[in-house]
Image (tube, rainbow, N blue to C red; front, side, top):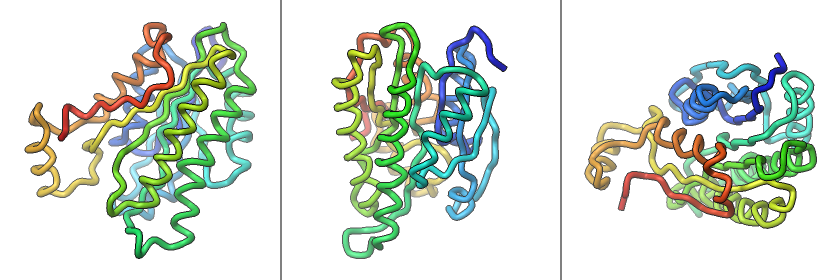
Length: 240
């Protein structure tokens, strides 16, 4: 499976309708050899249910709540397809709860998946990166949602700080790091009234699609994105 194509590792590619799947498809079209991860038990316990898809050239099931998973994941990917040049962090734990009713287990799992796993994946990527200087890419998907979704929003806020630190600390290794906030994206989780509300509040008059986010990730991972680093980029159609 090894080839001359650069390797991109995209996490969270578990559903056909998801942002991770759109990113994997776009990077593959751009000429990347795409390795991906998924974790079906997460989708199975969510309202939308499982929608399994194995996109890319190599797919690994990984429970990123397990602190040993990032190193094992890189072991599998590197041995199967080669060294990773771009790391796209599109996985998440997202279960609604408030300040008053969030359980300790839920809070800890959100931070394990959305914060700790991303730190470990970034670290593993940086330690193993062997590409030409300036070609390494980290792109993490973030969010500013927090009200009614406290552990998710708090863990994403911590992820933002990790990205800023990675940009400064990994820059000398030739790696850029950025976060993308795609806003509310039509991946099948919205009900009818919410879809109407978001359309009304968006100047462009439509919902965001996974492809919208994938287009920006494509730019950041490509050569034209080489001078963009340490940024928390919002791409949500002007939602106010």
